[in-house]
Image (cartoon, rainbow, N blue to C red; front, side, top):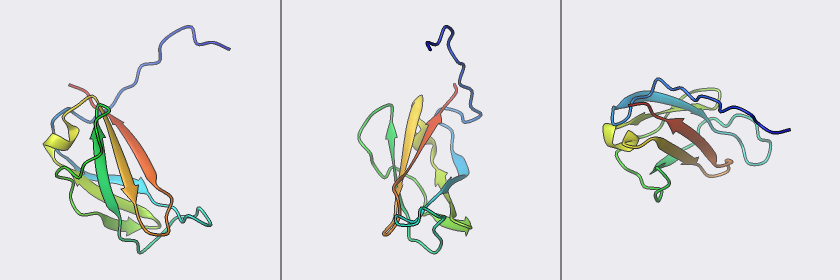
Length: 101
């Protein structure tokens, strides 16, 4: 079928405002189960731009394959921010954040 009406996307993340402890899941590249004990590297793309490290903090593991990263205000200076997280032996994780003014 077709979509007759638009779907509103809402977010509590504010444009150009720092965001602490953003959580995301890393999974094992073979089993696709949550991956623990990984050294995760993150980068972000703002409004379709190239991926860059920006001022993203070092990634810390919470537990059970959940990792946390802090975004600086400049890392969220756009409407559509895409996080890319990689680690050896893991699936690449992408998380999209839509910011609000």
